[in-house]
Amino acid sequence: PFFTTKPIGQGTGLGLSMVYGYVKQTKGHIRILSEPGHGTSVLLYLPRFEGAYEESLAESSLQMPQGAGQKILVIEDEAVIRTLIVEVLTELGYAVLDAQDALSALPLLESSQHIDLLITDIALPGMDGRQLAQLARQYRPGLRVLFATGYAEGCLDEYSGNGIGIITKPFSINVFAQRVWDILSHE
Image 1 (cartoon, helix red, strand yellow):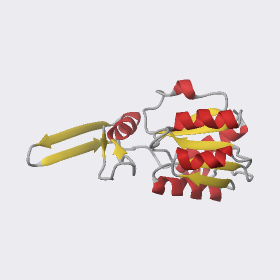
Image 2 (tube, rainbow, N blue to C red):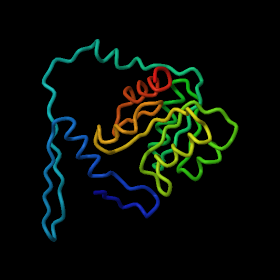
Image 3 (cartoon, helix red, strand yellow):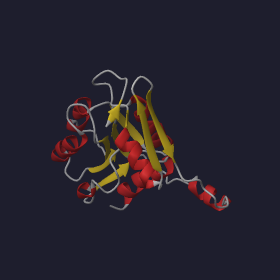
């Protein structure tokens, strides 16, 4: 289900299940054509927006909730995604720590440093995000956790609630900012 040119242990590339989930969420379709000796083509059909552009909708989407220095630990093995998440959270007013995997995050979680929210990819090399969150909550009962996943929406509902949330990749920055705000403020 995953295609990658990356070496083992350096990420999984873009999962076809993630692409399929996104396309189906948008009411689109995927067609895969494969011929020996000619390669494979993946055709993505996404619905076209035919409504009128609403300026008020565009303006409201730019208003993201701002943090107030809450400390967030981000664990993501894909460096580009991790950097983007850290940058967005910092611009929103959060204090951010980051790690590339569970092993490098453990010393931060075992320390006395205050952490308000753990944001972790579920599919991490070695110890996965669920195992890490379970261990983290042993050190820090009540720690809020936001799982990021490429799985189809709704398949991980059993992990949400009680200070735990889920966001499905790919996600927009606005949706991500709102989800972080919600889990820190309301859950």
